Image 1 (cartoon, rainbow, N blue to C red):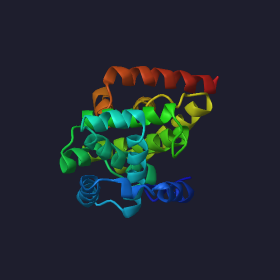
Image 2: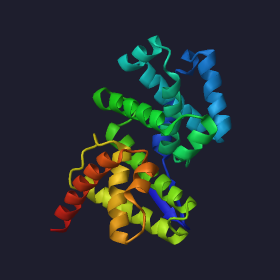
Image 3: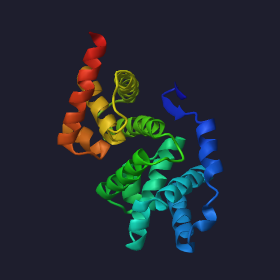
Image 4: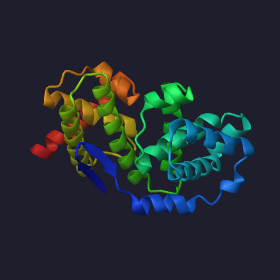
Length: 238
C-alpha cells in the first residue's frame, strides 16, 4: 500500500516487511566478514535493523542459488551484498539514492546496477522469498521517487514539480501494468520509461540524459522502454 501526503512518499509494508524479516533465519550462515560488511553498510548509510534483516534475507537467497555459488567460488560476492542492501532499502521504504551508495560506499553506479539486475533475474527464474512481480513493482516506485529527488537536488524541478512528477509517473506505471507491462522489464528500465513520458507530458525541462543518469540506465534502452510504455498508455486512452 502506498501513501502520499504532505509532500512525502512512504510505503506501508507491514505484511511484506514482516515476511522478509521472519525469513531471515539464516543469518548464522553468514561469515564473520559478511557480518562485518553488513554492519558497516548499515552504519555508513544510517539504515534500520529492519532493512539489514531484509538485506540479509535477499543476499542469502541469492548466495544459495547457482549464480551465487558461482560468484562465491570467485570471491566476487561483495558487490551482491551491497546490491542486496540497496534493494532491501527500497523495498522496505527507506529512501536511499544511487548517489549515496557512490559517495558513502564507494561503489560505482554501473556495478551496483549490474549486480541488482543479476539478483532480480535470478528471482525471475526460480522460486524466491518474495513474489517477483511484487518486488519489481515496489522497486520501480522507489526508483521513481529517487529520480525525482535527484532532479530536485540538482535544481531541475521545484518541490511542487517533484511531487507532481512522482504522482503522474505512478499513474502511468499502474496504467501500463494494467495493460500488460511485463514484470521482466527491469525496474530501473520501467522507472526511466514512465518518468520520461511523465516529463514530456508535464512540459518539464529535463533532458533524456538527465533521466537516464538518474535511473542508472542506458539512454538508448531507456528510450526503447519509454516507447513500449507510451504505446500501452495510448492503448488505454483509445
